[in-house]
Length: 261
Image (cartoon, rainbow, N blue to C red; front, side, top):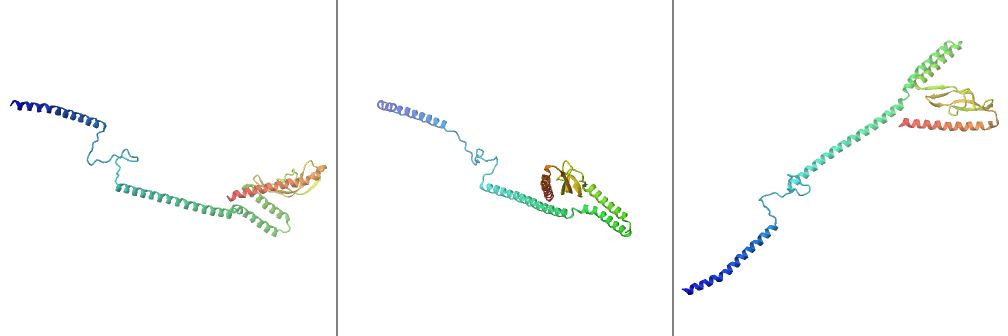
């Protein structure tokens, strides 16, 4: 009995170290597991959870990410772009048609203007023609009374000049006795005389101005000073007259160009 107790006591003593080591190993293992879990963040997994797209570029809240939904959205965007393209194309065609019609209308108006530009002037000249007809009838009836014929012609001339001057700005100017101006006078003849500067001494045809522009220079005879430089005077007048004619031609060309625009 005592022997059995002794063996049992020895066996008990021999098991204590193993049990102690097992407890220490278990404690060390628990500590290692705790340290490992502390370095790994906890992730809560929820069943049937949708992936978070907030961090992805271009993602919008509530956006559907299935392939079918993306395809439908792309088709809708394509249809929208097609509608916008059709609208812009329609606007372009309308604007192009308006531009073409505008050009045709302007061309037609220009042709009509050129065709009927003188209608107002001719309408004002018709009464003058009527006056000529009446003057000719009066002259035929009173062949022996020349004064009535002359008076009738002067009345017609006065009416014509008044009409052109008052309604169209055409003015007649006299040149005889004035200093020669190559812009207003055209020297047909020249001679030397007792003058201090070239002077118009005879007028063959009067000159006319349209407002401030000379449209026909007066055809005149010019008398130049009788001195040592008299030989150079005609050449100087011709040179000045040529320059004046060139300037007049340039002005008329520019004026006609502006009317054509």
